[in-house]
Length: 416
Image 1 (cartoon, helix red, strand yellow):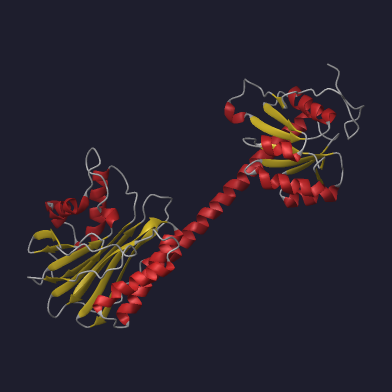
Image 2 (cartoon, one colour):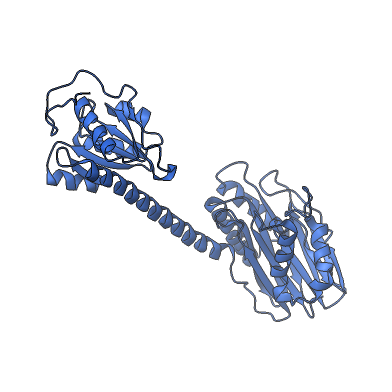
């Protein structure tokens, strides 16, 4: 076949026939898939397109070349390509405007400019706009063109990896800031009880969810505790969890009557949530240390577990409705401690939703009670008990939990 030529840096007369009727030139079939490249040449000059194909074929480059004669055609063929080789003079785009449009549609594909204009300033501007390279027709041979395309693809991949790494770092920094808001230091001074806290994010890209807790002492003999969970995972849910925790702390410190705290918290939830279907579950406990008793309120949350007199049992408080579904005051449950040695474990449902054994059976509250009643559990020091529980539950689950886990363990005396 006689090579066609045209005067755009690759000199010769115009051509009539299109050398690649399907717009593509097959790559080297002997190369493994990972080393092949799909390159889209956006070029309206048939002769120049033919010569690009010939240059790549002569070097046995392993590059599959697709050809589009306009930007509109390139939009239809760009899916799945590794690199776009762009001429700056097209029927529907000229100069840097065409480059900007290709960069916008290219996604993760590298973009190289191949033009007949030997303009150093234009090349600098093109690279500044986002092109990986600037090549001049008539100044590249097959080896140089192949090398430039492969280097461009690797540079683009390196840039994408750096961008993704930066995004991960930003998410981690954001999560750390939100975590500090979700998981504060207990605001208490008494030594009559000890409080041990625990938080572990689920396995969803190390993003924290909406689990939160707080501890506030308002009088020498009174301590308020809360554990809550906003449905969902991610920044929005975590931010909402921070708002609810801060609102709860403010309500308690302001001396709002007990029965009004959770209804007010529900108003905050309903006004701040981004979607109507977002809800939260909450468990609160008010400790009266002088009377050695507690008042527990649940809003769709699993009940606390009481450890006392060598026994382990869930607190039989009414479950109540989720916050944000149908406003209704949670029913208060009075819990009398029969001994000065007790612990109250409050937790989010991530701890009890793991599977046990084969099938879909979950740990749930009875399973958690059994774990706490194991002889091995009684040998664990109270500060390490929450982490031990998570470890045992994950063993039964066969791996890490999908959901976040937050826990408060408040203990008096010997704690059991």
